[in-house]
Length: 269
View 1 (cartoon, one colour):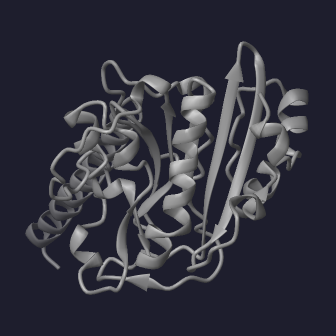
View 2: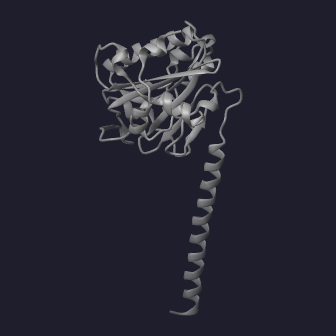
View 3: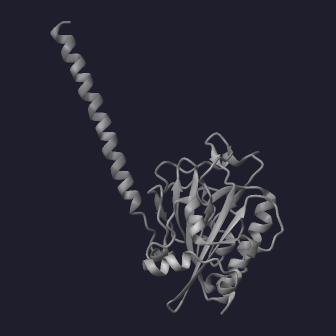
């Protein structure tokens, strides 16, 4: 091999290495900037946000989420539902939009087309009717998960209405919700969006320093059982998901509350 060919090969190697390293640096910068995303005037109380198993957390103005790229949906969505947020105002449903805040790109709504599953909201549009902007923000594809229509309009809808009842009764609650993304599950669409076998809701109420919590684990199927039959401990959902729901609480208090499974204690006040 002559010297000219050697120089050409070396130059090609240097160019390839440069572009590879540059892409890595750009990806790191994008990820660092992404981790700092926090919309102004956000109503989410970050003091009660769960841990993220993926490291991909986005703070929208009216809710926060942790995105799981392998499942093409949020592992959790968290927000505060205040009494003042409750409204009967009905806005026109917008089209679903891809969430551009997700660095790996959120799943496209077309994955749901002819799949047999609803685009199930995690932060319900019904919890964000206090303004059109808040309502429409729930129609980002990072805030949906595949749900059968019977489940979405049945027991899950009943639980969402109950949460609004408690938000009114207790003058606000903190809500964390998502699908259980562990274990074997089917997928839909070309991007293989996971269809959870279970969905959960974890609620926290802080009544002047008196903190209580309750958790629901609901099988993804049509059923008419009373809601209290789906009450589990927060610990049980943590074991299923790997998520630490309230790491900001003092450890002794967190351990005591998360081990409890008491519908009556939650409902009493």
